[in-house]
Length: 462
Image (cartoon, rainbow, N blue to C red; front, top):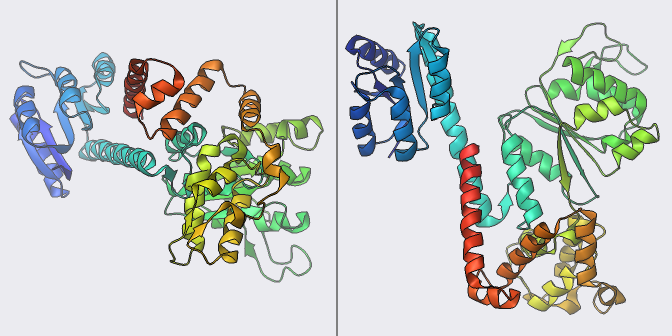
């Protein structure tokens, strides 16, 4: 079992090795020593360490050669290499071999401590990413976000990649698709999770008051400003500010928001002093901002500042495979502890609806059905659109083809998505799936192996 704060120090220079061991022990780390790369690898075969700190030049096997061996033995263990001052070639070679960092000799004690602490942080981050990936694979969810469709899994993967950054994020999609849930998931799975997450709907507050809400005001700035007030940017310092319906922001406020994004400082209404702020901006809209730019209603420069990382939430009608897990979640939410089930016939009916209100409309339908029936099961007749012509008018094949065309999906992507659907319907039974698809089952096994290799490569790249 790994001791999370344990270090293996590898150096043929006994004095250097003992000095480093003493330094780390004084700071509360568990420390083991090895005089050579060969002995270090033997030690690592017996037990794991949080970080390995090794010299590069040692008799026999070098530190760089040890990194290559360790990548195969314990790929999750970060290695920090110590190299002579000015040996840039060695540093580059070390990073290519798989070292997570390096430090040049001679070094100050605080410098080596900081470098090793960064390595511990990197390992913790990678382990958290692996945990999140396992959680997504197991539950088809990430935080409050729920979905098992390829589109949602891509969104989960993107959130994991960018959650720890500070770049602005622009979330687009129809109303009810869960844009605020994406924003919350980004925040609470990132480095700012312990800091404030502050949402504001740009359409809910009159524009005359919105500037004061965002940037604050000083006493006497306007009639009724009897005291100074901190704005949401200051309150969100260190955390995330979620600007919902950013497409409805007036041009005057757009200009002021752009200045904040450029300078990372705010000036309250009526004030003369500026205040530095550290805030990650996540914005969302159901509007076509490029169309708004063309119409002169949205600033192009602000759009590019916000759209550093775009995340598009597809409508529910394009991902019917997400309906069952969403229904299960809504049933649990509104069941008040009772055991309630949705029959397969009702689920099939739900999958055929157009869901113009997306997940929000689906939740409303489930809540209503549960309120109006006392039975332990919810059948198709319990749904508010039972017997309506709506279901008959919806051609599932047409919906699928239209959605794939709208997404500019290639034939290969369409094929992959269809295969995934058949595998889900057969419960992962490749023999049965192959019969339905009219292909050799070996093709499915090869596809699964290829997917596993790609997932492993993606995990190692995180």
